[in-house]
Image (cartoon, rainbow, N blue to C red; front, side):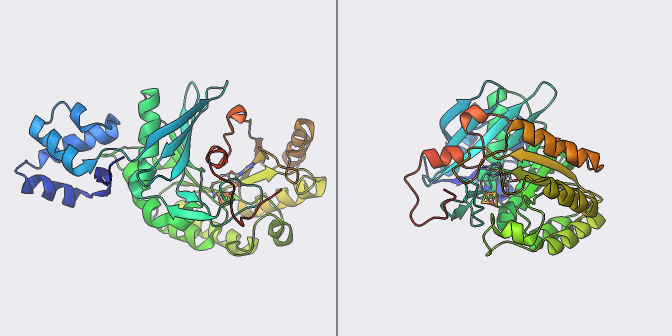
Length: 351
Ligand code: SAH
Ligand code: SF4
């Protein structure tokens, strides 16, 4: 792939100035934006209402997309997972979850992840690099192009810790939210974090009604310390006060994500504690049975997962047990990339 700048990394001022320098009127800017964000076009030569010389100028100076699909896997339930190659040769994963009334794309924000949760494939090799804003946005446009339909929901739950790349994630989310650009309502965007307190506060300060999901996975700091290494783990009490701040600023309640890990966080007393925390957070709970288990981290049996859910519901907690989407295609975060990588050197390994 070429090393040209992705056109989506230029802001309005820069692109309009570029057009002006080459003798093109500023209305061409909006035409280009429509092709990129409304028609999900990744080929300047297909932008048929642009004059040929402008198409060629753009081809010579910019890339229209940063992603090259390297591998596509589709599960029986329709979930599609792409392994995408970036311009520098790194790879990321993007997942499309289509449904009759809605379609959700799950996007990555980093190559790898520095947090290194013990059960997660994305963290195994640590952080390689942050994605640029165009690499983040291009995943959403790829999903639209593939299904020839605008996606209805974006979840920032792919590879990486979003709060460690707010510098590029926030401009990407602004592009996706802006009415004149992609135009996706804030309530259709969810950002998931392992609980990076400074990031939750920064997201709150944007004042957008984006949804926040907290990957809690445990009900005490001691229990959390067994699955999340210390370097980037924040205390639950601090996460709670950051969520309160988020609620004050945005009027949005967070969701608590809870990966069910057999023998680690799936006892009846864990459900009791979780219900208590959910009340404090004013949050609903998403239970995710651990997928792609290793010897050490396995999902409880389906019956046990349902029992855990029942307990939460009995305590009055709003909770769901997330259906396995795309289990047959390794759709958990980071798994496909891991299959295509050589073994990690000195990495944090759960097995
Ligand atoms: N880094 C962010 C967002 C990406 S991970 C975060 O941790 O929130 C998205 C979700 O998938 C998180 O809740 C994460 O803990 C969960 N996850 C990762 N690996 C998993 C696995 N093997 N089984 C179940 N859930 C997993
Ligand atoms: Fe990073 Fe999230 Fe995976 Fe933890 S679960 S290693 S924070 S991507």
